[in-house]
Image 1 (cartoon, rainbow, N blue to C red):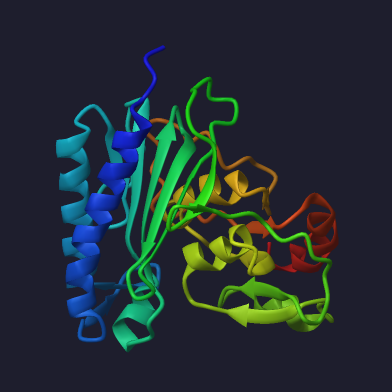
Image 2 (tube, helix red, strand yellow):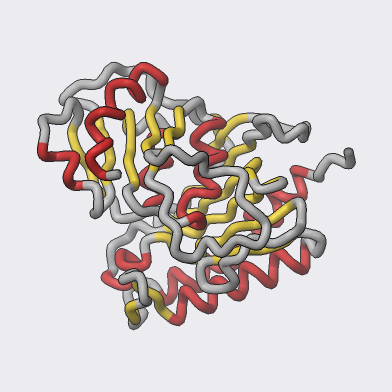
Length: 269
């Protein structure tokens, strides 16, 4: 098997998100949003960023396929495929809340092996390599601005964080062992676990472009990823349309926390 040039792949992801992020910072807070069929928002900035990212990736890595939020939702035939979220947190972006990101996940035969997320307003860059059972060889680990990150070793307590999404507030019907935070950005929500900020996070209805990059990064940092449905998320199926399919997910810092949190969040299924 010819192994990918991971250094080149990381450089391509960083250059693409840096370029797009610079323009999005100029648009931030000034974009007019429209409502899509699923109730989420889209702006001209989303559409522009989606096209720029697709073009950049396809020019730099022409053998790779692409699935993106504002483009095609059908999983392609290529062994390597990028999944793009041009602006994760469009509502924050539109309303002037300074927390939103650009997400790129690279899949091999339907399963993520690399993720890169850029948060322009914080000038933070997350990336991670998680080869799993792919048969690929390469670097390992998760990183924030080039420095290794790991999940927390702390026990659940009132001084620790757990992150919810807007559609998972049913969790609060019962007492919860951590302080709750709601950030409005699926990628950053889950990445707080990878960075050791939160002990866990849940997303009730994320789409494939919300989770592809962070699936690799969070697990590379030591997190436990638990789909809240019986079916496994990956590998994706060639030819299937993933435009409307949600992937309810719990991410925990450690296995024992997963066992503690899982009964509390099952209500969102």
